[in-house]
Length: 244
Image 1 (tube, rainbow, N blue to C red):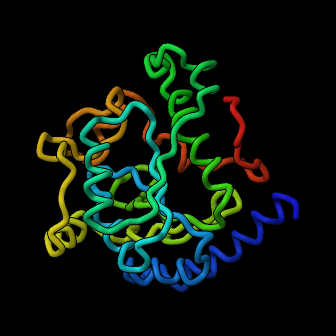
Image 2 (cartoon, rainbow, N blue to C red):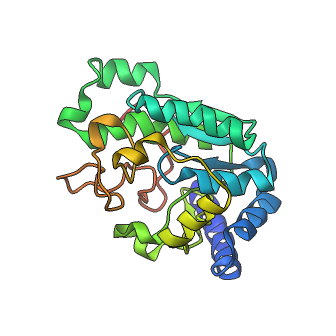
Image 3 (cartoon, rainbow, N blue to C red):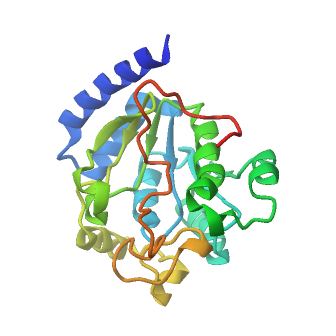
């Protein structure tokens, strides 16, 4: 089947599911996603400041759901520790560490300082390409995005289509208050850097302390997304090679 046909088929399914689930509890959304896609469903997590809630919810549906974790090589040590601690705490049995391809780094970022001159290109080889490669084996995926993050996320649907795959945003409707209440109710451990003033946590060169949502990410720049949630032009398949 041609890529545009796959995209169209997925778009129709996503529209139907969004109509059914747009007001549903996140756990209901996750169960519907898992029932629909089974082993062809993955959850993408940064193991960042707000990740514990979605991971806890997912563990109740299936502790064996594949968790895709982008280990960019630029993460805080605290994030790597948190990834191990939280996965063990929640009994997540299939956490996959996605790393940038050696060839991409050797050609595009041999000194590991590409972030100084082009944060977009740095994100592309360290996040976008590794995730594209990993998602090639799945038909649906789950994110932790929420509307209260602002920006392009204000109109976030619960279910959408992205690059020929159905994409679920179970927490889209939840507020920060609801998120924090759930974490407290279930005694979920916080990322260690939250106590140091980090409300959103990514790679260390591009993350600063901030209590204003994602304001500490790429501070002072127009950039608000790393690229993995940026829509591609219709009919343009994911780039799973090594070129930027």
